[in-house]
Image (cartoon, rainbow, N blue to C red; front, side, top):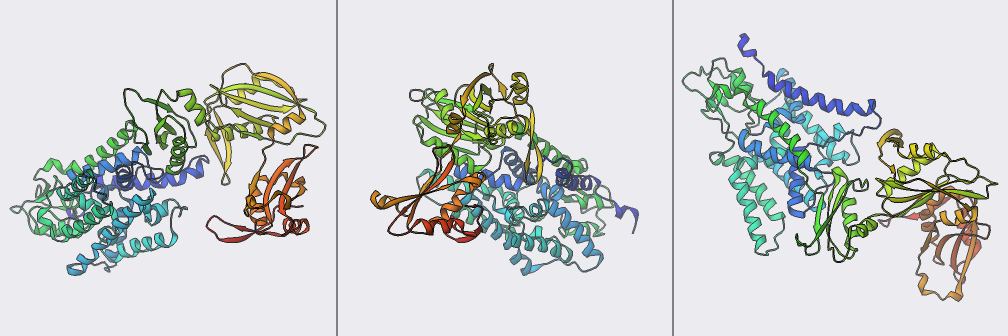
Length: 634
């Protein structure tokens, strides 16, 4: 073989290796930087197309999706219209690995190309998978592809979003299929490959979407399932029989029949097993403009792109330009995770309140919970949330509610003891101050951890004001250095432990006034910090108060297990005579548990024995029952 036949497509290899290196680097970074959490779907174009579809259909983004994925999805479509499937040719890690494995099969002489009717039947599988993926994504606002995506499963180490069985089968098909068959996953199973082929038939795709939109405008309640099914079925039919109707992409591989020597190198080199040597213009649906045939051709200007020799640089350059454009667009294009309006919004008379820094706005679920809460506020007309920026927009009627009232509705007052008050302390010092950049329960949690680690504080509470009023409680014998406390509260970062790892969080609290120090009694502090737990069940309201009695049990050493009360409640509810469980303060300001029961059905001894049992029988939300070790000691 001559030296010319060994020419390599260096730009493509550099881009492919570059993206593999980036993925490996991102995967390894948590081992170097403990507080780094990799996001392997941050710029996924297929996730972006799903997210865009979800936004257009449901007016909400799929969970954790942002404008970055949307931008990449839009540019994927544009790139296919103009340059073919460049993502598949230059970026996709599954495609790259499949090609490498295919070369192994080629060397072992065990790789074959499926042709004829078998090839046509197998091509339907990726459209089935495309339908399933989009159906469940649009129905649930969760990216269904994460359950089986081989790349996502391997990159995340089989995260909780991955279904082990689905992903294992997909990985096996990628590996085994690539060794024995020409790009088995890419040709026959990849849903991104399916939707990319649909985009190549742009006229069909656009007609399908426009028809659906027009029918919806006539108030016809047509489910998204119909255009989705039509697109998948039509895309499959066009793929196997509609080559002459393939008007896009604009850029195509061309062959000069006059100078061609019929050496067949182009056909043999093609990763997709396209018979380039038999075509004047390559219109094959599988062509992704990888340019391997252009590079390998030994005769100058015989195989080109659109009969232009200078266009040989088009695919790698276009790939890089599209990526850079997507990254830039994602910085300026703000797509809301949800955008819901339940009132009439008049731009001239409605107000818009914007709040950033809400750390509890972190996904689709928390966004929907926020919208549900704001629906209950009189005068609020709608909300939009932006997960990537922890930001919300609230549309409101200024004649009913103002910005300060909206802020108060956003705010959740909280209080918590940080550590136990030592014996012998009969009074408590209170430091009252106002904190800027303090918005939600996550801020309160971070503040509590910061005070626990850096100060002798025994408790903290927050109260709405502008800025937020915070009261920090210290033992009465503590010398409080106001400047030192201010420095601690205005720390730029703090460290927390999560899943066994230490993470560094950015915080930006600012003390807005001179702290005021006062003193209260220990009794007043205990009463202020105590948060009673009350739960009734087994149809309490059906019983006359005359048949109810109460068993009181000191909480004692169980004071650290208050968060486990729901387990104890579920266990006690198995006794039909127990109808209420609560925590309260006794006369000595000690916490006690009070169990209300029907004296004709059960008795204190039976209840106490249940509380002392080695295990607790609990009923979960789905109705399933199970046993857990009893964490209480009475």
